[in-house]
Image 1 (cartoon, helix red, strand yellow):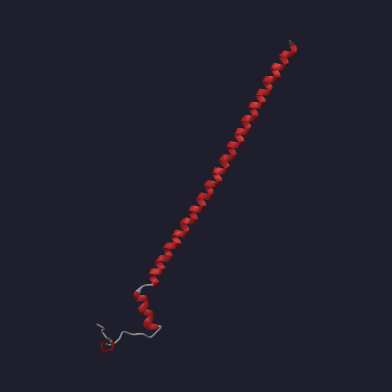
Image 2: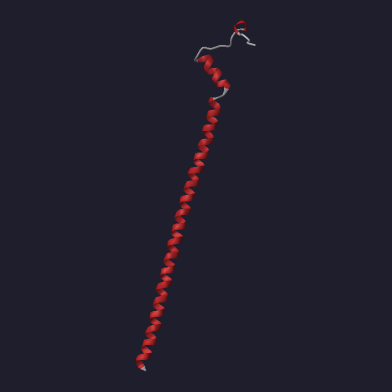
Length: 96
């Protein structure tokens, strides 16, 4: 009977060790998932920052395009750099 008692005690210890190991394994998996999620969150934040930068640059480029297409600017370049001027009244021909 004494030997049987030792087996029961040893069985309890092995169950406790098994449960502790399972708990540690589950905890490690949980921590690994949390670290992965945190890395993904940082990556998303970084990509959103890049997207905001690109949108701001796009807005600036649209403003620059509008400025470059401005009729006043084109007229100024035509007069100063190209030496152009408006035609005289007799130089205009109307077509029917």
